[in-house]
Image 1 (tube, rainbow, N blue to C red):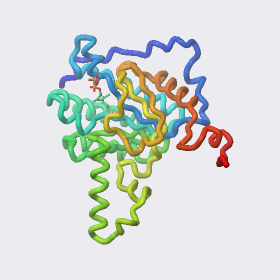
Image 2: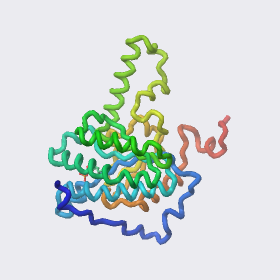
Image 3: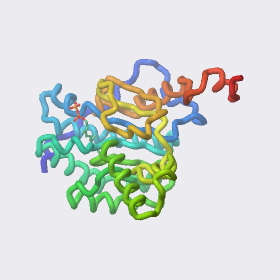
Image 4: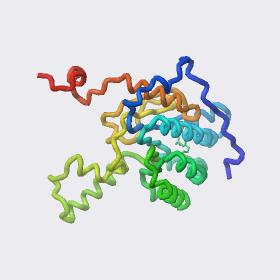
Length: 270
Ligand code: FPP
């Protein structure tokens, strides 16, 4: 048990604006789906002369706080990029530490998820996960399946390229078996094979930790998402940072390829 020696130690220290960020949010215009790339754990730990796992451990407190914030606001879907298919290439001790942390956290948090009416889902190549992690997740998904508040989606052993290739393989099998003709495949049909089928596309994608990239995360689904990058490293990220991202989102004009005038007037331009 690596984690008994490491104790989380961080907390939100305020934004310096004076006004509470949550009071500036228009709850009638919330993004219904927010996706987060939780980055910066390793650097956060290294800055403190600690092992990278110390960053991940502290990142769990951020997960709790942000999930609580999203649920309080009434966000319907929150997807967290917890482990990518590329993360399997990290040093074995970090991979097993992360898996251990995942199992411990899921086990511990199911009662809180139920208390807060939060449903858990997972996207990704779950077959790759160790047996105990997969079983724990399956149990947690079953135990929270009746909840209808926030849906918390953990992206685990996930990457978009894996997801898209996996989807195409399944579709190709349907074409080969004669279930569908290739020319009848359209956007809706394709989306049925993605991990996110049934979920609305994320409207807001947040990446913490200062890097400006999307790292193989929900590439198809974020076609029209608003992107928000912050220097704040994940272990320092708190619900007020989430609220600031939502406020920023609410100040953007989303045009979806139309003109600004069309969007304002909600009618086609002649
Ligand atoms: C990226 O930071 C973070 C991860 C690969 C893991 C995220 C995991 C957690 C926050 C903890 C467990 C989560 C749940 C849902 C229980 P990095 O290690 O790439 O940081 P760096 O860019 O500073 O190296």
